[in-house]
Length: 502
Image (cartoon, rainbow, N blue to C red; front, side, top):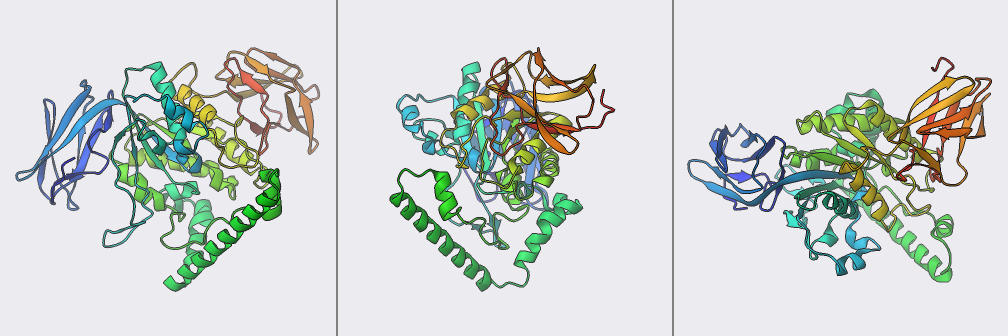
């Protein structure tokens, strides 16, 4: 991208970018306020006028070309974006497990040895935590982001989940061009990714996120914040030293035993007015930086850091989807919600509640899809070192192979002394091991075996019609035993009901 003093494209609109082929898209940038800007793509010529802030954008109809140069002009300036391609564009968003780089995956060396360049490109949204009034940003040493072709030299920097997803997309159609935009930050709550007004307009979310943030920073000086951060870093260093010493003395000890002895890494760090953990911070500085780009799909993999407040996660997730669709001006933008993997070291049922919220969101919100990876994960490692199984499943679902979601129970009815649970996204079901449900009778949870399976329906005996609720693998670290005919796991769940069910 050539860049002049006044006329510019927004940063994501740059050389080697990928735009969606069969969808309207915008081109956006900046110029002098009130200045006329013309943009030319092939034989299409459109104009706009920069607003009072110097921002301009132009909407284009879907293009049939596969590759082009985009030209923008004012009366005095001329800029271009070269090697623009059209294909499928995916936004990957969330926290650390989708941020996890391919170079850190246990298969990286093997992948690198046999890798050939792909017709695919990726762009890492700059992880800006805070913008100062003078335009400077925190952190101030961020690398310049650009579109990069996925090659041996670059794949280590892309999301491991994104890479394994990409393999499946290209396997379905090797001729297509893929663009992946990475927009993620480890350790973050969904509240960091939602507009401030959206959080403030909901009394429960305001009480859970906005008010505590204000209380944590109220009345403190810059020196106070710096002192708290220094103390926090000291506690992290002490923990890391103790953990290293313990593992040296006990080389055969499991991570679980080590954590029980030494404790977990201190988290979160102390809150500051400029912390990336603050409510809405990453929405303002990362999401809005790509609001004028156009996506085919969003893959959202997050929830780990909302374990302290799982009771509000369904509301958070639904508001986030609505918020982003409004920001991107695309009310039918598909969201693929990745249901959390297994992990034991959280408060009881916290991750189970997050998974339930993810399932409920997909049930209620149009154009959403569930991808359960609850049969993956590491019992005592929140960052599993292999992302192949999860990424491959995500890629197959997103590519539209066979099913648009992993299976989940979408209907419960009562017939002739039996509960009938109907599973969507399945034509048949099978058990792997002893599959048991739990049912609530007289305020007591009891194990309940399946009576039989008929196609995509599960039959459970309820002769006395006294079951008050039912759950399947509603645990932080579940052991899933029920799968559809292509071995996608039935999502864990917990449903309560009264006896006026069908």
